[in-house]
Image (cartoon, rainbow, N blue to C red; front, side):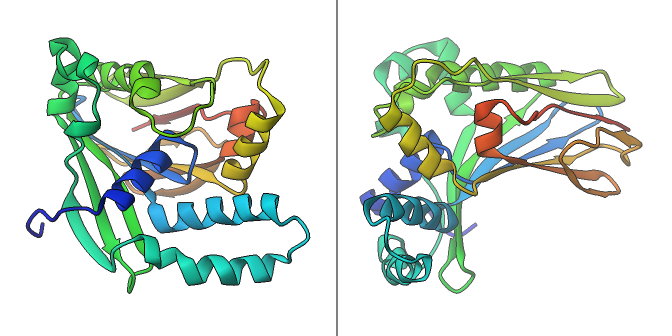
Length: 252
């Protein structure tokens, strides 16, 4: 990795906003035979920002054609980001003291690495975080920590959005993820409009890197199965509305 570089403040704010909202998200889990591994979650900031800008501009200018909106968005898009970056992001200043001063919570921050990598030439800027876990139990605890503290660490949304819960299970020869989305109720029309704009055409991708070749996998939303790698893809608006399941199970 290249030496640590300072990320412009505007870029960091945009990155945090995207992670705390509902952009295109890729999750990767590298799972070892003993249950240890690495969890990664990231988004292409450029693609996500393009989607959000198109959605928001479409709400402001409903009579404008998609082509004209896209031309405006593309002209402005890379002005918000550096032309090339490969950096670890120091996010400690944006973590509330209630988390930093709590040893039970800080232990997850100490093992978490946030990064931004990509370039204008490549056409993407992947931003996200990486967490090395010693067991699937620790992965579960880390995911619970993220869910419990998402509202405290989010920026700029000012929306009371129901938070989903995820449950992982591992028995040495199979791995599963169950996603539980709370019932949606009492959301204002303005909140639903913003959510609809953010989720338009947005997807969530889960890539599992297994310790052995995948033998049997759940078929719903499966888009790829090659050797030890299994890939699922979900439509975020359907997940949010409860019309699509994000549960998966693989045996190996």
